[in-house]
Amino acid sequence: MGDFSLLEVPRSVPIQDPEAYLAAAMAWHFGGDTGSSFWLRTARTLDFDPLTEVKSFADLRRFPNLVNELREVPFEDLVPRGYGSSPPVPQIFESGGTTGAPKRTVQMPDWIAQVVQWQTEDFATGGFVRGHGFLCLMPGGPHGVGYFSRLVSGRLGAAFHAIDLDPRWVKKLAARNAAAEVAAYVDHVIEQAVFVLQTQNVANLHTTPPLLEAIARNDRVVDLVNDKIRYLLLSGAHVDADTLDLLREIFPDTTITMAFGSTMVLSQAVTRTADDGSFVFDPRTPYVVFWVVDPDTGERVPYGQPGQVVMNHISKGMFIPNNLERDLAVRMPGPAGQLSDSVSAVRPVTTFEGEAVIEGVY
Picture 1 (spheres, rainbow, N blue to C red):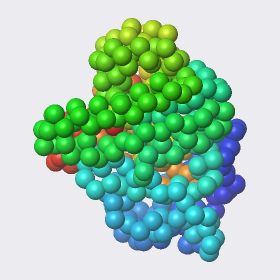
Picture 2 (spheres, rainbow, N blue to C red):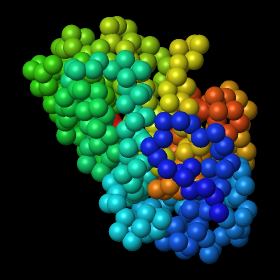
Picture 3 (spheres, rainbow, N blue to C red):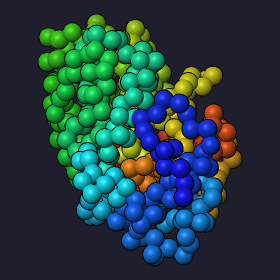
């Protein structure tokens, strides 16, 4: 049996022995007394024994990619039995529904505390202006981003200002080429932001690249942002280097940074800036491990080359291995050695599982 104390979060000190952590996670998720109904049921269908045959992170490739089952499985089946007969109530977060019905994850209170700790550190080191309001032009509802931003804002002493944003509706409009309706919806979102910018003390803004590009096309809103906002975090959709350079010219007095995460890894990567000014995203190992692979062969591409991102999440509360995501990225060396790849120049694939990928505004 693994040392389950390694799985306890929140934790401020890094895990020193990733393989021991992995062994503990396998013992937890596939032990009859501690594993979830979902994984104990799935284990019976595997052609290997996770308890004895998963000895390295590379062995996670042996698992089938089961994320599509998260569209339908009852959330109770995802909660590990090790949390007790009356487990803490989890938060349920859903994916954006880019590739069909949304996928659902459970986040237990211990994991939420860990993510809030990480994001508070990220915001603070990234340039967040403490004590001044935080305007969040990001989805709320079933999406984790709005929930976590609200908690982190409070940790940093900033009043939180939210707007209504339904990214799934925008995707539907875009799918039927209703360009005028998409534009009208984006105007509606920006109008809500203007109400806050005109009347409230805000210095921090979290939004998506498509929404910031829409703001950049409106001189009146550009002036408002330049007058007020000093920290601007982009996430939720992708932006190319040339567009990012242009946005920095339009908002010269604002620190612009980016975050990269996924509902399926229940967190965000650490952002660092490369020598050429591009952003590199380092997953938080051993909880999250990325591989950048050739989608045709499944083999990892050379460093500096593009491939498709495979994501693994390994924590006490949830286990999601070998998930081929809809993101293309350049494989970069990670600070954690060979345990995980880091990624840069992230962008979506054009089609995924036979469906066109539509980002919309998120």
